[in-house]
Every structure is written in C-alpha cells, then in structure tokens.
Image 1 (cartoon, one colour):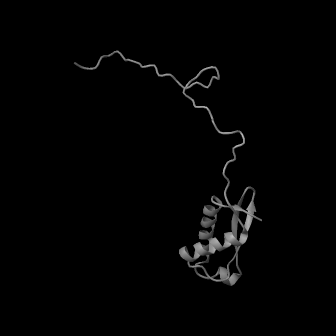
Image 2 (tube, rainbow, N blue to C red):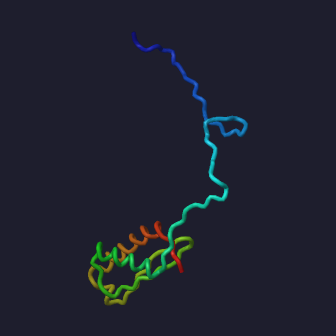
Amino acid sequence: MGPSSATRWRVVPSPSTDACQSGNLRENNLPEDTVTMSKPAKTEAELIEMARAELKVHANCPDGIVISVIPDGDSWEFRAEADDATIAKPGYPECVAMLVQIGDHLCKQYNFKE
C-alpha cells in the first residue's frame, strides 16, 4: 500500500531560554573570572627571524631586503624596504608577496611585543 496523504507531525520540544523553564540548554559552569587564552607575544627580532627562516624555504629572495614589524591596531604586519638596485633584482616582488603571506599567517599565531 502507498503512503498516506495525511502528514504526521511529531512535536519536538525546542530549547528554552526562559530562566523559569528547564529546557535542554546547558548551564555555563565556567567561573566568571575565566580568562580566555591569548596568543603568545614575540619581539620584532623574533618575528623577523621567523619570517626570514620561512622566506629561505619558500622564496628566492635577493640580499638587501630590510624587514620591519609595523603595529596595526590590535594586530601587526611586516614591512619590506630595499634600495632601487635590490628592488630591480629578480625575485624581489615574489619575496615581498611571500612576506605578506607569512605575516598574515604569523599574526594569527603571535602578538607583537614592543
């Protein structure tokens, strides 16, 4: 025999946010003074060292690039500077692009400690 044309509905209790009801929402058992974990902080020298190590592995960067860390609100970013001769060398644009990617990755893992 085929399915019936009548639809059967099952009533499912929904969670309650009313303080007087005991719905299926769980109580937060965390103490009020619970501290959220923060990212570890690194100095400019540590961040630059990490960036240079990554650049050695992933990019063929010319010598003469100066990397610095620039605070940006609650975050930070790398800044690359070089003279005109270094900028004209093959691999410089790719190196700077890779530095930006490395900075994006590292700033999610580490805070900047001035």
